[in-house]
Image (cartoon, rainbow, N blue to C red; front, top):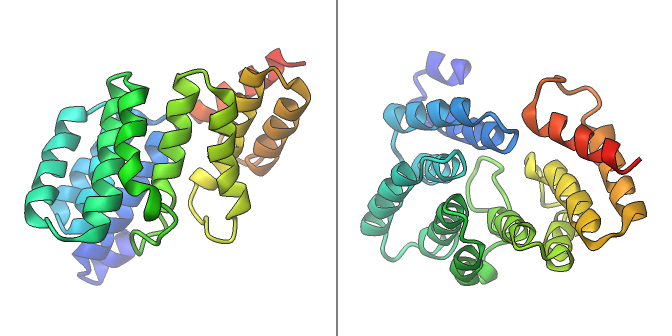
Length: 217
């Protein structure tokens, strides 16, 4: 971001910042994610920035901010395939999850089923609809369906280059635990913890994973 700003590339800097907001929120740093998302939109409110920022805000609990950006995108890009069939359904699903309505989230994501494996931005934010659908199934305590969705990140690991690819292994562990398959759950937790063995120890999602894994011992 600093390099982009130094070279007067505000749009690139803002897109990097919006992508960072998504990483932060999925790691559990919700307050920082909200700040990064809002700063990115203020710096350069182009379509990529607004879509990623809206999703980050929704995941961080600012559903009103997310809905405002979604409405702007819907009005500005009524015929844009990725906006209408990928990003808006994903943002709406994230808002629904923020309101503890996983069934509405799953329904919203039906529209994205034909585009969810596409390259939606140039900033390596991939398979968002898949991840949120999996999260919705976890919220519904449906470990079987959640595992199917999280497994897609492993099956398509050549496509996945964002942090959700690693977090999907944690999701898979939670899905297996929900199914009562302790052996598979332990293995999935171990995969995640091995991948993040050099991570900062105070990351909220890492602390949660370690506590959950300890209970399986």
